Image 1 (cartoon, rainbow, N blue to C red):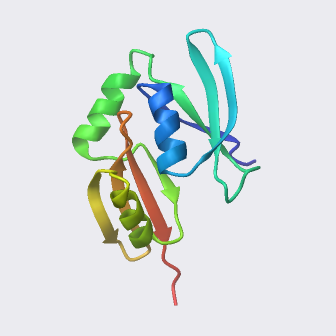
Image 2: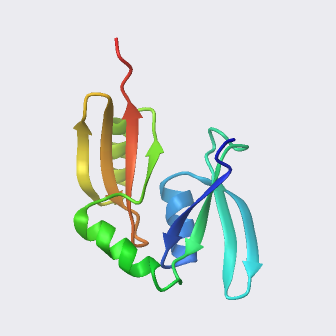
Length: 131
């Protein structure tokens, strides 16, 4: 068993598509019209045949209060792995990304949290290998 698809609920698919591709660097895999919304999936350029991230409209009545509660408590909706959290933090800040938590060393991982402009907090993390 492996992860094939995961979703992040977004308040505006077009805005999310711009942010996740132009700012974060993901690549579009699918963009299929589905009524008033679209089936948009993205992949990492480092693993184009890997797991897909779906930019899911946050239309379900339970989603918006859930997202708001996570943001209010400072809890990221999901986490993306990066090679170097410090370098990625600097790169994203230079692009105007607002971080709610700068890089923090937790011993086994270094992580930072940013606002994805679509109603979510997202964590980036680097696993620290034991020496």
